[in-house]
Length: 164
Image (cartoon, rainbow, N blue to C red; front, side, top):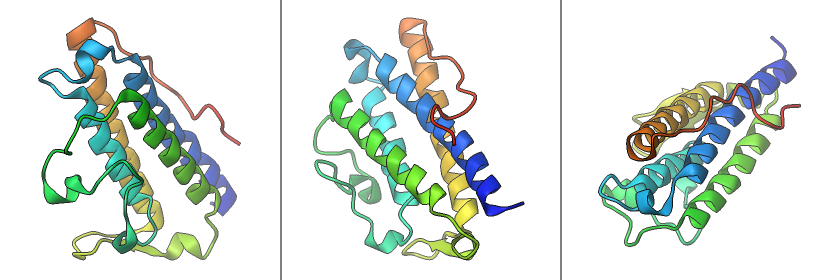
């Protein structure tokens, strides 16, 4: 398979996963955002790790402000993030993902993503697939929460809205 074909396939499906996450967050009403099930936190956790796994050298990772590294410290953030903050973080990560995928070449697909503790060592394509699975897992959880709380959920997204 040629690298350009791989890039197109990866973005089509990864972009769709991100779009599904976006749709779930967008549909969430205010009354569900910060109830006992912590919809906002589930969305934040997913986006935090989306960002982290998209960072080529994860030892240099830091989330953009106003977000912190509470996810690495196994604690809740110091405050509830608003829907607009979460959606902006997701928009940032979507662009980061798209740029990373479109920048892949024969050399970069051979590189490895290794976390600081060296417990995760993945080829770049594999960390992208791992990350996409994580996003889809949480998008499904958020859709389930929406079904339970408002008896509605976004529809399936077949491919990214901006495939090339």
